[in-house]
Length: 192
Image (cartoon, rainbow, N blue to C red; front, side, top):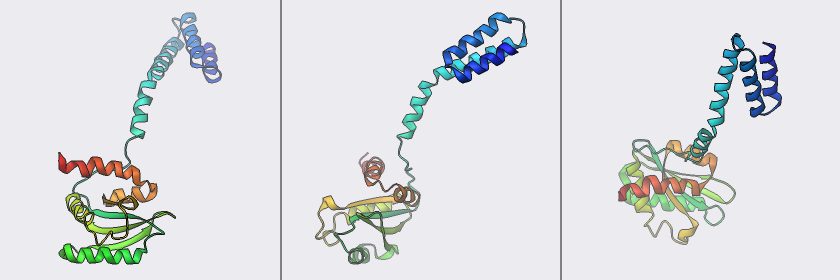
């Protein structure tokens, strides 16, 4: 038992290789003692841990995965990201409301705005019962010259987004990260 305790302390203070040698020493010196079984158990566990780098690389891949989840049947919004200083949010909301009155009269859409950061504001059009309805809105509003007059295409982004994903987006404030998710899950969906 003292040899096993000594192996434990070596494991705590020195590296895995020294720990493994100490456990093998316990097994060699005390082949009939119950400490041998415990040392063997610890060695087996140590071997599994040494094989773990394969698992950690798999975990790194999951970390790189998008924080967003696509769900077609979820409530959706359509968001328009604009430069905060270039556009007056109230004027732009009027443009969007006029667009909604002309093309989505029966949809009961609400338009609001929120500051995303010091550089960007978000106009939120809600809500749509399905991803497809928000995507239809996106397709139509993106082509409307009245809504985006005086704004160059490089200065704004329009995205359909689920209510759950909007919460994540607002916390992360990463429009390029969401754009990648949007292209994979909305833009390319129709083309498949």
